Length: 127
Image 1 (cartoon, rainbow, N blue to C red):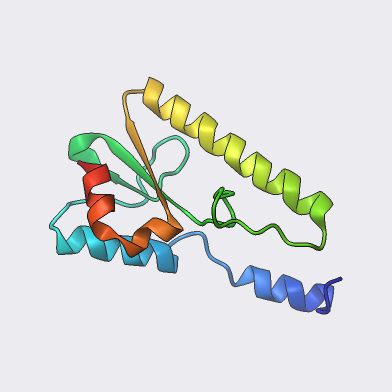
Image 2 (cartoon, rainbow, N blue to C red; image 1 turned 90 degrees about the vertical axis):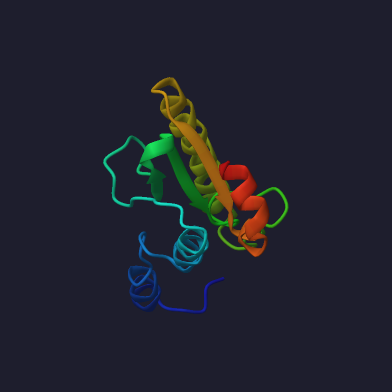
């Protein structure tokens, strides 16, 4: 059971922003440190977090919780009827976006939140 009122929960959730998250900022820093040019807010299907135009690569930074990481996603024990389908829809949408972008000639790279701890693996994945 949630011990916060609906009004307070709404206020907390309204402060969550879809752009410039801590994960994105950390990833951008890795790219800048290795002089990899990227763009954000590029009008591409699926709204990638950033792209590398010269490589026609769309990059998505996925939170382990919101995108259902098999290793790190811990489903909440409350409101299971909401969260299970929500995470499943996110995963289904991720697959559709990746498939569509690949058909349109884009390379799709998904970086998991836990992968940000090892920049060298991320850079290898981008190359």
